Length: 227
Figure (cartoon, rainbow, N blue to C red):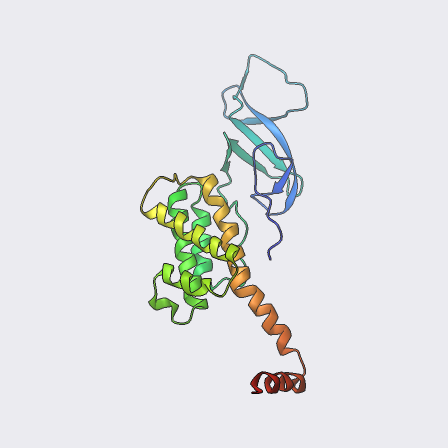
């Protein structure tokens, strides 16, 4: 499984930097403009503030965070990062099929601008994953593929599949659920969990089994074929 991703949040002491991607401590600053020249000055919240008549202080809706690792600044408005425009969700599981991985990244890139479109793309990514793990899956609907694979996995994995399907459907056919950035973000983690369960775990076991001596694997075959 991917190393735990710590999502950037306003006033959080540490998270994965939107510039360098490293999990690092963050320093928080207020913003102010001086002499109307649009030159932004940064003032640490913990230090004194000089209230000169030449300085205009922005309200608390505008903040800045500075990464201790790369020392670059991120600008915030309200609860969101407005600079840099970057991916703020965990990376896709390396075992995710390439087409699904492309949809995952496309979804992540537009999350802040269109959570609804992001959720719809994640549903498409799930469909591509199921097409790979279900024999003949490309001929089936996503619901049929979930029914087929559902008999081979635990209930929590089945629930995860239906969460992505439902939220993705809501994005395409609006219903009672509002599609917003905060409600869409958990879908990325859930999709990675699905890939871990359906692909990564199976692959790891297969790789370990292949390392067994041939003579031992032959004895397993004789045992399993014994009548």
